[in-house]
Image (cartoon, rainbow, N blue to C red; front, top):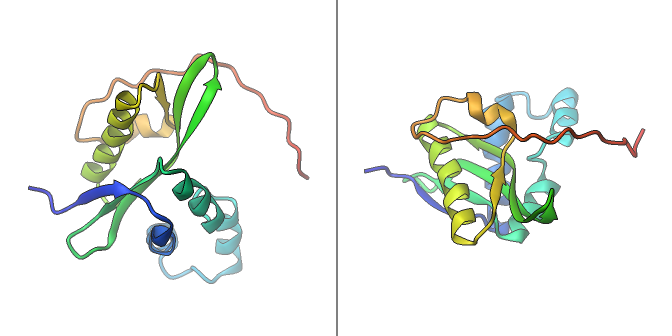
Length: 150
């Protein structure tokens, strides 16, 4: 039996999740200027964590030592791309393939339970090694954007 538990992320988790991801991505370079610039352009910067955790659609994985083992940032999109309810998973990170798979499964099951029509993930999730089978479908929408900042 796994020693990992999963629960809805809380605002109290922001600092632990941030530190977890900093260690995952940057190890000893957390104070370097270049690292801080990369963090500012990331999905896991503190403002993003606070935003997502307030919504109640993000989850954390906690190990037996009460440390973060993984998380995902989710938010609902209502009336988006002709669907009534879509869960957008902005970012997912974990220490293991098993935790990654469980977090994906939680997003999927939660969305089914709440009658969402689909869950959107970044396409890089479909190339990760997962311990459960998922039938990812390509999103057939061609999207462009206008940049509103310099």
